[in-house]
Image (tube, rainbow, N blue to C red; front, side, top):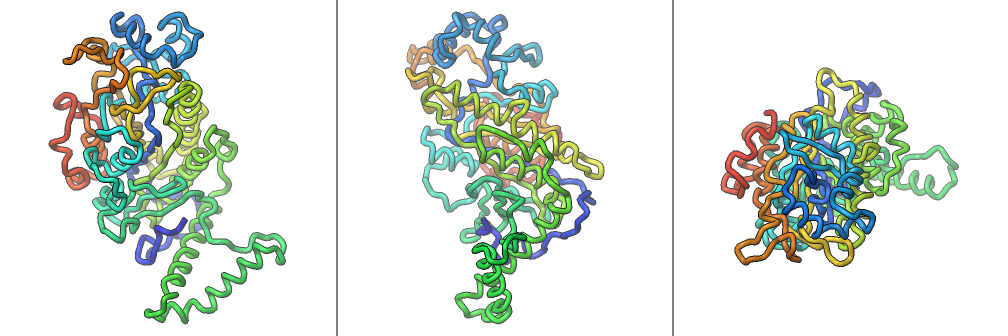
Amino acid sequence: MYASMAAGTGLAAPLSASAACSPVVDMPRTLVNLMLYGGMDSKFIFMPAPNHFSSNYVDKIWAARSVLYGTDYPSYTDMFDNEYLLTSYDGFDFGIYKRCGWLKSEFDADRVAVIANSFCSRNRRHDQSQLNANAGDPVFNDLYYDRDGWGGRLVEQLPGQAQTVELAHEISVFGNGSSEGERLQQVVHAQNTRAIALPNYDGGSLTSRRNILMRALKSYYQARGQEVTGQTDSPYSLFFQHNAAFREFGDTVEARLNGCGELPASLAGLDLYSNHFEQQCRNLYDVCLGLAPGDLDVRTVSMRYDGWDTHNNQIGRIGNNLEDLFGTSGGLATAMSEIELLPYVSKPARDQMVLYFSSDFGRQLRANGDAGTDHGRGIFSILWGKDVNGGLYGEMFPEREANPDGNGKIPLETSGADVLGQTSTEKILAEVCDWMEPGVSGNVFPGAASADIETPGLLDGLMAL
């Protein structure tokens, strides 16, 4: 848990352990990178309204994907009316999947941008594409994990002692810094913010195995700490330095959160399909509650949700996932409702955040024979936040998918055809980086200026800078 917090990192300036919960400063602009591992069929979330779109496209997409919805619906219109929530943007009608009620309400409030036909990788392999997405390098073609991530490069460009906080069960490449051998120098792993401290006496039996072991180890480190830490040539010196740093850090985080009281009931009782994502949503609340305003300068946050490799029974599997993420009682809806109530000085913490959702790759246009979809390439990227200029960027349902291509094949009728990736995520994320700190995007994404984009100027005004 503490592997990233070695001596010489952000622990050099410990948090203030004040019991007062109300922050004295506003939360800085903060990016949350939420990676959806497994390759999400983002096209499934959004479908064209039957009466607004050409019958040629609607007929072909229904033939290509009707198996995903079972046998309950005799027509595309019947399916759409039961499975999708009608939404409109700039006179264009489309549907958002019914279990994504929070996403729809946020889209209607102009806080969600959907960038169609984007790509974060040019291949269909999970391992390489996940690495490419976290590195922010769509054309990287080596399965080599000892490299920098785009979140790590970003925090290196920000003023102060900026940090990435990883909220999932393992640290992703996203937060890796650019210095070889010190990739995790600006990363803190907080898999469970309320259990981040090293063990102390738990108030139970003095003779319990846990308390005996805890007291013995703590006494040993305290008794020998000063002696061994001063011996620079001792092979044990680093262990004692880390123990002291970890214990001080953990105790002060624990004291700060304890001073703010228990988790809100809605988060403490959150019951999602994914227990891992439940915990990450609680951690996100705690980051906004007690960590971001302190000496630990949280600027980027890493989260993940697994289980998007929907080769079969897609509607059941992806539906549960989407409800966890985007449902009206899902993890993000619950966390953001509570974060909005936090007592910041002038700017609500919720308004200082941008969430970016991406995945390894997309899925193919045409369903397979097992009511699922196979690996594709192009995706629909999603951004959320008050400073996101919400709307649709790129053509969501291009007629080319329903018409013969240069080889005489119709993509919606051809197994293996992808969402055509036309806008590199480098372009999208460069805009977000400049929202975080004007002018840094060129150092975080040096290839962004020449990266692919569907149409020139497509992303102009994506962020309110």
